Length: 202
Image (cartoon, rainbow, N blue to C red; front, side, top):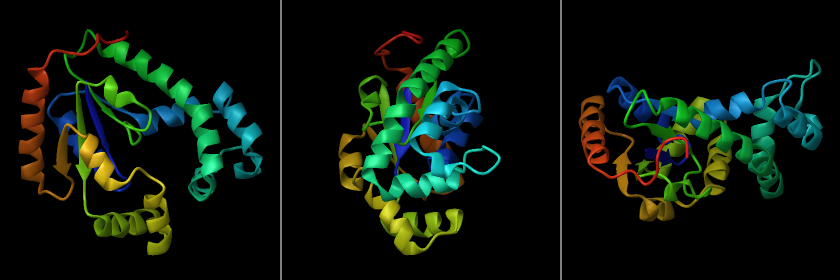
């Protein structure tokens, strides 16, 4: 299992597509987070209880409002994490178990790999890294926010230096497509040669 992580707007999802193109299944934590808060799920109700003001008149979750709220308050961020992390982990293990018979290797794309302790369970941790100036530029453009707001969002995450220090491998997120393809191929060769820490679904 490869843990793929990096700061916000570092290019994790872009890199994940190269793993998928190479035939390696990728589990996306963002997708899991969406699944666990589908209307009618226990997590959806718990989020509505905790943050009633981030729901629209028709009862749907306003993800943009929720994002703004949790990036503005450490207390709210921790509250949301306490609601979502357990069901996300449960769903992750379920999907990982389903992959057991299909592929000898999988990738988990997750922003909080180190913060949640998942780095201790993956065989190889790969950090996608770009300079902060590029993060700010990408985030401002992608999410239509000011550079100041982008900088604030980056500041609440694990410091870049700490993330790099904890990583088994660091992959620059501003490489050309050909360079990324070559790097990903090399990572897959390395990961395939390693003895897994744990079996899928355990």
